[in-house]
Length: 388
Length: 225
Image (cartoon, rainbow over the protein chains, first blue to last red):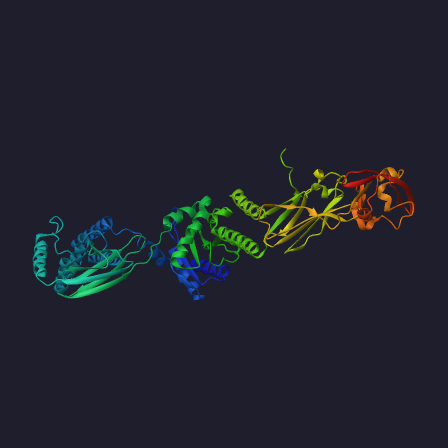
């Protein structure tokens, strides 16, 4: 009941202060020793959506601003490999539910990052985990398919004998030999922008636009370029078949990280700086305002940060005394540094105008001289006396 | 930068404003013989050109010319703002004390771009024998400027005036001292030394008469006192 009251008051507060805003992003932020108020943010977002606003909820905001900024390299792959091994260990303890959950999370992560850029081992480990889950579920067919998929991801990989039993390694080697005799498929990749790195199954293969030969089966494709969020795709290649993918890479969020913003808002002396850090986030998300929810004691503080230019300002802030469970604060963003005033002779306009004036003056003088008669002076005087 | 621009503007203005027009200098040469110039009390310069006719400029000489070698303009006459590329007509007249032209020079120049030219003076319409009178000693302290007219007659049995001069007709040349006047009767009846003459000055409504005699004949003028 208390949470519902908080959300309603917060929604009322936001509604009353952003009368003209229709695009909002709600961002739950953590505070020292406090978790982000995820539930309150979701309720606030739902309430605002119900009032006709277009709202990007907290989870979506975090997904958008973290994609492309979270690494998908070797460390990321190592963590996932460790997770798959932990899941296999759970499976040996007959904790199938935990193993299945972990496998699903690893799979989601792999697909989210298009296989990543940390090598094919993590894909193989995940497939072999899924195979083991299928076998323990008495589904031999799915187990066989997962083995094929593992081989397809890494046809040249030798399994680690410390992590994989001999029987599994033999099966992997035999299936690899069988699939290598099949006609490879061709994958063509185009990207926007061009010249992006194309990674297939965790291995860098070419620079777009390009084509690669792959073992038939499912493959994860990732294209990355500087300052852009990676583009990902999944492709199923038939033996001797071909497929093409066109990936559009969007600009990556380049503003301050959520953790940095949290620490700035937690420090009263840097609160304005924190509000300013929300501006690039608003621009990246293409919303009018970012509403940050920050836990503060037993209250939730709402921080509004209107972008500096081209966006409507927030309305008057409701007095916080009327809201016992939520406080609101409209922080004025840091003014961008003023452009250094150039001297008049540093401005091209001044030279253009000055040149025009001078040209007009000279032209006028020339026209005047051409149209006017030349005058002279006549002097009449006595002849100088002859020399003696 | 501002200084540079100001200098540029100033240079433009100076360049536009300081370009001098051509100057034509007319050197007026004495007549031949120079004695033609004797009796001249002042000069007048007339200029007309394509841009119009300049107001005549008249200037009295400091002292009436009694010697041909003194035949000089009293000063330099300057006429600005004349169309430099149009023909210009210049006339120089030398007047005696009675307002008669004794010497004259004239030239027509195609433009003002010749630099300098010489204009010789020649005889004017009046080359009558000259009578020279120093008037101030005869006025008994009356300023010459108060005299509006003078008349010269022969005191005994003369037929009419030898000379009648009006200040209005003679203009500023009337005041040149001594007075030098062309006398028509002297052409046919040259005066002898000792010839008596009567001079009547009209000043402030009064007529002052003085008897004088011809005391000298220089060959170029007769002096009476």
